[in-house]
Amino acid sequence: MFLLLAASPARAQGPAPETAPPLFPGGALISYNSIFTTRGLMANPSETIPATARPTFSHEGDFNFTWGFHPDFDLTVIVPVLTNHFQVPGGALLADGTGLGDTLLLVKYRFYRRDSQRGTTQASITGGPKIPTGRTNLADDTGKLLPATMQPGSGSTDFLIAANWTYTGLFNLRRLVADEDFHSVISSRGTQKTRLGSTVESRFWLSYRPYESKDVTREWFIGPALTWLHAQDDQIGGATQHGSGGDVLLAGVTTYAGVRPGMHVWIGLDWDVAHSTGATFMPVRRHISFGITQQFRFHVLGK
Image 1 (cartoon, rainbow, N blue to C red):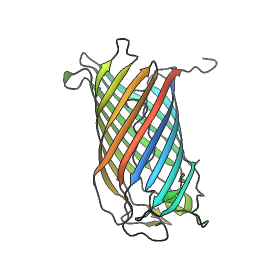
Image 2 (tube, one colour):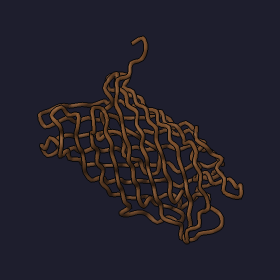
Image 3 (cartoon, rainbow, N blue to C red):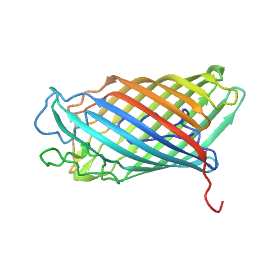
Image 4 (spheres, helix red, strand yellow):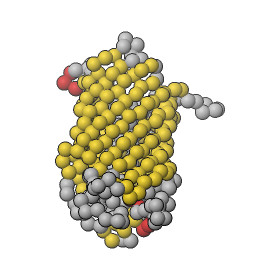
């Protein structure tokens, strides 16, 4: 199992129900995750897109490879493809486009594991760069370059750091699991002299496993999730764009199902329950994620 950490405004649920454990040594997975994010329309539309505007609707398809290369360690590569739309009240579509996003290279280390009759407690840290492989030249119908916030890529080399904790057997119920993912993306200056606001995210998921086959090849997890997102203000040409950052609280539900040995599918739904009201802040309103994962053994030649 591994943690998917996409540097999107709201991280999607990853290819495993528990985020702290790494993959077993010699194990690997491939995964596809489809993420749909909807934001509220801007109150004061104009013929141009503001420099700090986010897509009103976006789709992100994440292609993922993870390899457990050492006990307590795994390596993850995530390559996203993004489609962004910007719409104003009245239905007019000012911009849309698709392109390759920035690639994530992540290493996870599990530094704590304790087994007991109750269950297992695990904790890990994850870190790695976001490499500027994404497209940064999307333009509108008139040929005008779209703002940096509307581009699939950032043009910047950023860094992601995370801490994860998984506690099975909560309240001495073997099938009840508490899982916390806390991570931050530290941004640098990128395309169009823009530094996107660094982000902090905390996601808590309480899951219950109502079904588990005797050989554990098929199982079902379901439970509520609570996510807090914080984004700092953007900077353009060194000037801080006050009111472009803010906070969002999302509540939702996530479910996983093991359909055959090594394969499972999942879907997660989240809705905005509270947010701040910055001058140009565009909070996430709805967030939908679904995907499929296949695990397998992966051996490097010579080992």
